Length: 323
Ligand SMILES: NC(=O)c1ccc[n+]([C@@H]2O[C@H](COP(=O)([O-])OP(=O)(O)OC[C@H]3O[C@@H](n4cnc5c(N)ncnc54)[C@H](O)[C@@H]3O)[C@@H](O)[C@H]2O)c1
Image 1 (cartoon, rainbow, N blue to C red):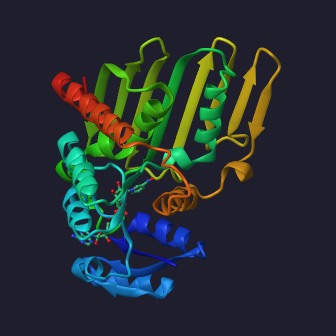
Image 2 (tube, rainbow, N blue to C red):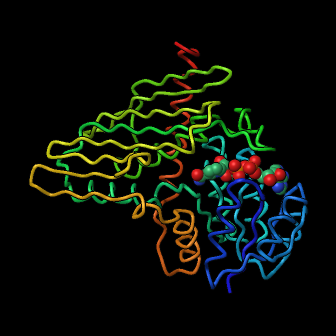
């Protein structure tokens, strides 16, 4: 049995606990939250221990790994504590709020012979994996235009005020479009930013980033946090190449469509695409801890993704808000 502890019993931890509960070889031993009532509620569902004291987990020799589901500004200090206690680590995205902090996290893990995996979940979404496959096979020819877009209701559950404070969350660039930037790094390598703009109104935050990669496509990334409930996350990827296209829109009746000029095509329904990316992500990380799989995402890619998000934010800031 692989014993794990969850640190932070908020929104995303619910997804993680549900995923671990489906794994017969993994046991959530302890759930930690400063708000011990939250930890208790979650622990009751899982049938495990709840505590507000992280040291109980760090000093527990049975616990092999911790899964950090904390607000972004707490990732660095928690990873450092866990690494020094000799625990392997899964940590939610974004790794950290600066590149230096992320590098420090990987360094301390290496020094303590533990592994750190950053949960950049779009790598485990079937639609994104299918698009990756289409690109790898060159099934659309040379990709020339890439449009990535995501929007969601502003995070506003109880206790989530930290998202609004950019010094704690990193804002839209680091917290939200990090997924699209990860997709770019994964498929095309580190991009160059052409322009980046931010709209920041009381009830609407939005960004548009234009990027390019050497010898690769022109790319646009668009991210929106809005005060209006849109009925869940809306995400889109549209890639047009010299010989075909692949388009994904999670709101469409037929979300995934690929067609090319050689007559090849593939369409995937909502049902086919809906297969719990958090389970697939965490299963992969556990298998990596056990040495039966190799990590799908490298430390370098995590750093490059964060670097791109920070550069885009800097460029938008230099330009000034709402221009
Ligand atoms: N992959 C995804 O799609 C995705 C989606 C949402 C959130 N996330 C990431 O997950 C992480 C958590 O986000 P969330 O939405 O669950 O936040 P949340 O605010 O809902 O939950 C955070 C929890 O941490 C607890 N906490 C705060 N400080 C603590 C401390 N010092 N020690 C112990 N517990 C503490 C809070 O009480 C709260 O229960 C963030 O890094 C976020 O970016 C990822």
